[in-house]
Length: 123
Image 1 (cartoon, rainbow, N blue to C red):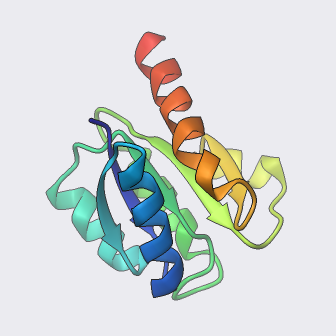
Image 2 (image 1 turned 45 degrees about the horizontal axis):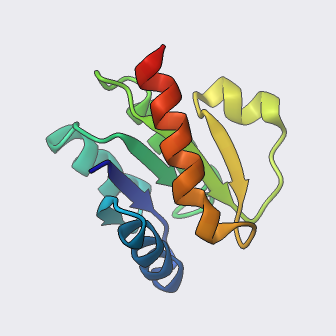
């Protein structure tokens, strides 16, 4: 069962994401800030995936999560989930594997994440 850390400062979004991911077979841990996410990752580094909002306690707080998670061994798949368009050069430079827009294909996100996890483990 894959394990995901979901990070968003909006409780309603976090609850919906957790339900969607759990229904698709993920073990889910949630955090409502970049600070909390980094603390969880430091304590419990064994995640297959990290999905983080971009704008939380600061406009680019999600990048803090991405940069922290990208240094973990083994490195999880990292996805930024945001309502704001971000140029690929920016999120790739930060270390994210993908960017998804909030509200677009929410129910398909766990399947996309599983595909990214399989790609990572097979390479």
